[in-house]
Image 1: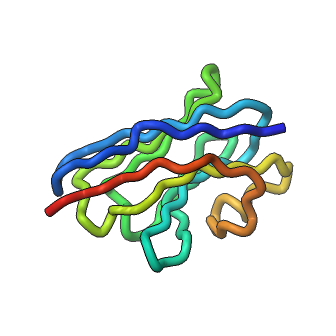
Image 2 (image 1 turned 90 degrees about the vertical axis):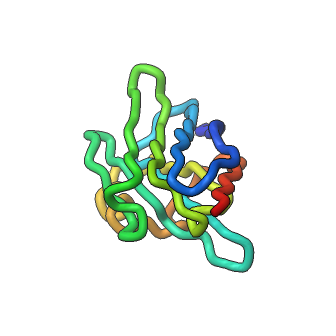
Length: 125
C-alpha cells in the first residue's frame, strides 16, 4: 500500500521560492505533482520516472524542478520565481505500474492511483 504525505506549502510574495516535499511509503514507479486552483481542474505540474527523467508543464518550465531522493523515498518540487497564478492546492501522486512511461509523459490525473492530502501554495502580488 502506498501512502503519500506532502509538506512545505505556504504563502510567499511573487518572485519568491518554496520547496514541497512528498514522503512516500511503499514502492512506486512514476511520481508526479499536480495542482488545483479554485474553480479549475486538477492539472499536472511535473512528473519523474523511476530513473529520474522529468517532465514539466509548459507553465512551469524553467521555474520548477522536480527531484527524488530514493534513499529517503521522498519527492521534491523546488518552485522558484513564483507567480500569483501558481496559487493552488498542490498534490503529490504516484503509480506502481511497471508500464509507467506514458503515465509520466501524459501527466493525466486519472492515471494516478495514489494521492497525498495536498498542501496549499499561495503567491501574492
